Image (cartoon, rainbow over all chains, first blue to last red; front, side):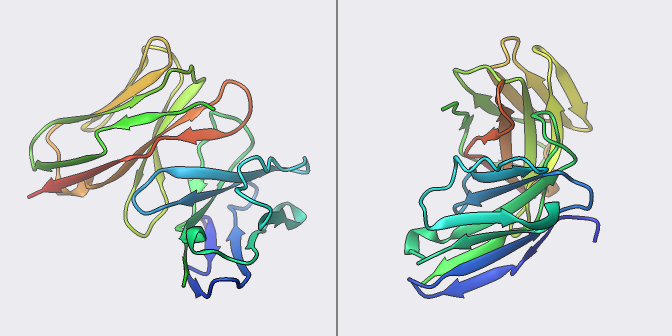
Length: 115
Length: 111
């Protein structure tokens, strides 16, 4: 596809379960970002990957959150032992290369609901 | 931590009215981006402003970056129902590669 693809679009799970969220960035984009957005709010930075460099994990809220990017393309965000406060929309974005002036292209997000 | 404050948080206006959304910080940003987000979708980039004092126009939307690169505004002329959405400003830190997002302004334009 031409844009950033995220799956699943919706995920409902019970408290304590692990979840995996997937992001397919735009082909050729070297930078990939994960954000969390609570209802009607701004975006909270979680982590970003740039090429083969070590990811910037400074935004991950706890050690229950982790992410990886395989082969410089697809990324998965994993949340272990989910809590109700993890409920939010998780957005992925990619950009052609790293740089503050680069436009970020967003997917439509995964809406995560923890019961 | 650099913070961006957006105001107002919520704006409900009639079609044809003008409005301005503000994005303010005490920190300097190397550039600032404005995004628009509709329900169930990801944000879409509207514009990037880079130079202090820069003004960019996109049809009925006018974006301005403050001279000191600490603030920005978005002005919409003759708002239309299609302008309804969440408007987000995002500042690029002078050092590093992350964007700092404001909390957003929810705009509702009634016909």
